[in-house]
Image (cartoon, rainbow, N blue to C red; front, side):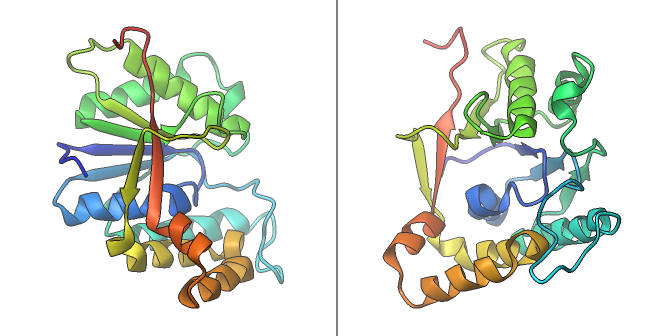
Length: 219
C-alpha cells in the first residue's frame, strides 16, 4: 500500500465505507496516515430498520449515527465528519453545493488520496451524485497538485488496485458489525461462514478493490 500524506474518504451513507474500504482505512491509520471520513447523510431513509425491527423511521437517524461512530472507533478513525445533508436528496441539491463542499475539504486537508464511488457506476443516485461532485472538484485542480481519486464501482470489473487487508480483518469485522440496523443477522451468517473457511467470502472480505478515476488530462 502506497504511503499517503492524508487520505480523505467521502461517502453519502453510514455503512458505505464498511465492506469496501474499512480495511484500507484501518491500514492507513495503522501506518500513521491521517484519515478523514466525511459522511454526507445519516442514511435516515434507509429501508432496513433491523430484523426483527429495532427502529422506527423517526429513531433511525440517531441509531445510524451511533452505528457510524462505533464503526469509526473500530477502524481507529478519529476525524469523522457528519456533513448534515439529507438522505436520498443529494442529486437534487442546487448545482455546485456538493462540489463546493468537496473543494472546502480538499483545501483544508490537502489530501494525496481521495476515496469514494465512481461516477455513473455506483447504482444509487446518492452514490453517483457524490462521485460526480468529487470528480468535478478535482478536475478543476492543476494536475500537478490534484490528489489521486480511488473509487468503488459496483458495475465495473477489472479494478486497477487490489489491496490485501487480511491483516486488518478484525477491525473490518467490527466495523461491519457496528452497522447492525443495516446488516444485522445477514452479516452474522456471513461472518460465521467466513470463520468456517468459506473461500469466496474470505477472498471478498480480505481484499479491497479500487478503480483509479481517469481525468480528461490524464495521459
